[in-house]
Image (cartoon, rainbow, N blue to C red; front, side, top):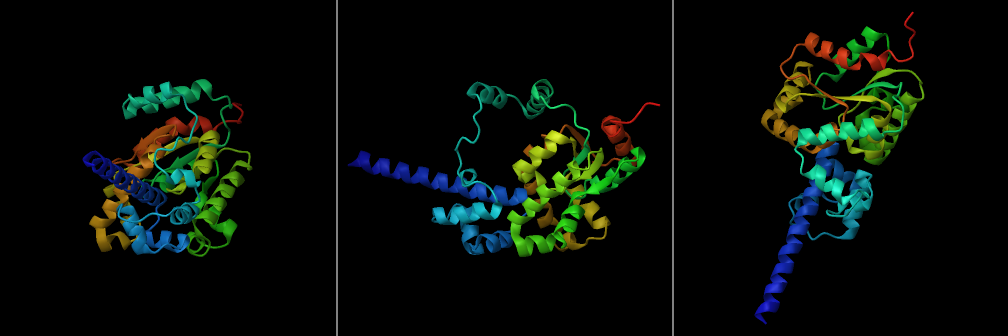
Length: 300
């Protein structure tokens, strides 16, 4: 009898842990996509109060609710469940990579890409990824001008396709429609058939198919800085909203960066702009990216 009671208690503890894992998963997905709880509530038709309990691991979770949340994120339902194997990858390879530190994992990724990627080097140009305020726009425009190539802000192209701004797209059509338009915009850039400098939105990396398309067709560069530097630059650009709660905004940005960093680090190169001059960053960027913008040009 005592053994049976102990087993029940252990099962209940495991269930509580699993519910907490699901809550953490939802919170991480929301942070990665830059969604507020209010946004997720609107597009999943799940109350903000319930979502708060869900993310805290305190909710009585139902499949129906998880399904609606997955739909709002526009991801397969299986990605909501912790522990499900999503890819058929050799366990030996997984164990090997798991025992490497972050720096060595990135080195292994680039070795594998260069050795086994059967696609030829693309002539699509450069894609700049990362959070707002890192310097993507400033450096991207100057790099494009330097090599006489088009500079394209993916956000502007998305707004042009939808004939409304990003805020209206997300508010009226939801994340699912926004991500589809985002994919369409990337495909439209690829159809141009010439090297460009493409500046992407910070949350593009949260949509696997679109991000993979980007990685396969562009030389990708993560333009990074610290959360504090990101906010200071946004404020210096005239957006005073972070000043209403700088400390809270910094913490939110830290979480977003933490959740997106594994994807950002899949880029072919990392350009750290922290406490560096514009000229210094541009010189490094030009040295790394110039060859990809000169593809197809005659030497004469």
